Image (cartoon, rainbow, N blue to C red; front, side):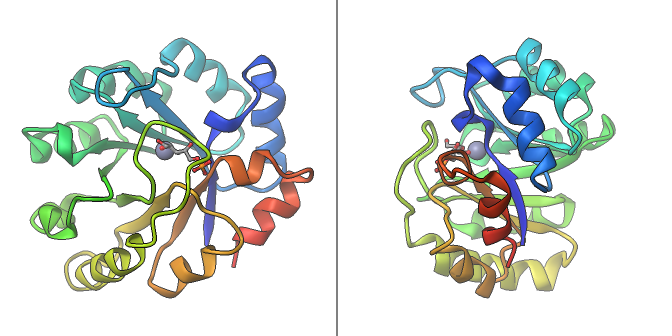
Length: 213
Ligand code: DX5
Ligand code: ZN
């Protein structure tokens, strides 16, 4: 299992310290939650702050857009050269076009599904994706409880992925901890995002290692 700590749960007064700490503690990606106050009822950070994160990070960025007007935000963040940019299928009229745009900018494209969105929605996009992110909470806030229905959903998606595009990774985001990570591993999940679990732990290295099963 790869681990992408979400900096949403970091101490924003000590962002450089916290980004350096999770990278030194062995994370695989730095997960960055971009919220616009429209698609979700919360507002986070833009390219100025994410650029500072990119400077401190020794691991690649995984940018999760929770915004309206995805294409505009892709243009804002592409110069920071993240590994992934993921956008919500619920908020995009032309997902295939946006996937092509992200890839043309040298970034791996990923799509996010809210808890209610069935995996079949992206069946005909799977061949063009590097990753699918399944939300296991309603997007907008850290520290929420894990929604269990993501387990059968990840299992279904994993079977689709094996048939259509075995290289496409599956990531799960929200309420992940050392108790539920095994359930995710067992249904074929490759990457977990963990915010409050990693940042509330005294020792971030031990927290990250407990998810790398
Ligand atoms: C929620 C964000 C998550 C969040 C995860 O909208 O997408 O990345 O920070 O935080 P935890 O792990 O605390 O649920
Ligand atoms: Zn996220």
